[in-house]
Length: 323
Image (cartoon, rainbow, N blue to C red; front, side):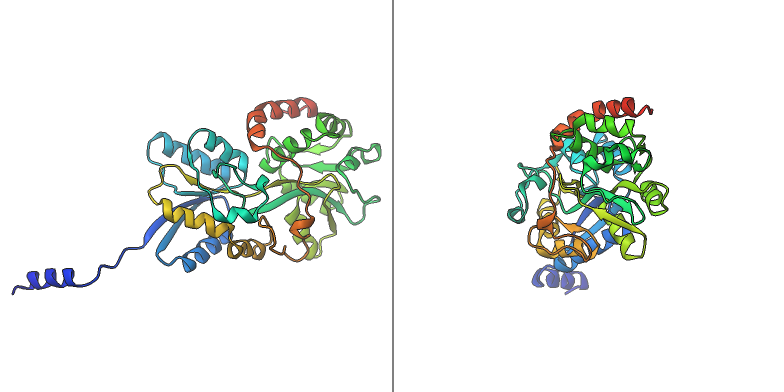
């Protein structure tokens, strides 16, 4: 028998070994967090290889939309900054609906009722103050008091996605609304740049008070920075780094496993290890953060925020006199 026939006979006789399936993830996570997430998932699912692309949400979405328009989307799964972006994709028919069994352990405000996207962590926005400040604020309303004139900094919703969601949340809240933003402007609140600039201003004492994402202040405090963070009594706005599956993915089963892993207790403990409040109920927060059960989330409607985005930006620009 020839070598070719022998090789063919052996190939038929031996059990076939399935090649690992490859899943493509587009994410705005920091590189280290993305690699940790992917490594943990692949360890739990050795038959699936994950390749990932990392960039800021705006640039990542521009790339993905160009691919979709060309009829060649490369991503199977998204893990990006906010639910508003994914709500837009869901409305455009670009996401697959998947009802994850892990959703039972989540507040229903943290995922799409139709299964288009799921929150994976809580990055809340509250109040940061310098420990040398004369007063300790306890509510959002405190920042609009006359004695706070010229003492408050916040990121601009024209620049920061978290600040835009924060504005949509507070302007939709009874007792605050657009009147609150008008009072902030009249109080000479500085609204520019992102969270980083606000933190630096407060930590240096340039502005004793600020509006900031939680982890930036809490981590800095642990490192000795003279700041404290307040979860206001009205509650906090939040972004959640949601995950979603692209419609038309050729690796749907693997993508569903990835979603389930992110939402699982194991996946949520990774979130804690990275230094964020977990979105899943019953998982302990990182040291220095409040328990998930003690965090009061303000009401937020991604679909309304999406519909109102341009009008909200225009109204903010008019109130604060910026372009």
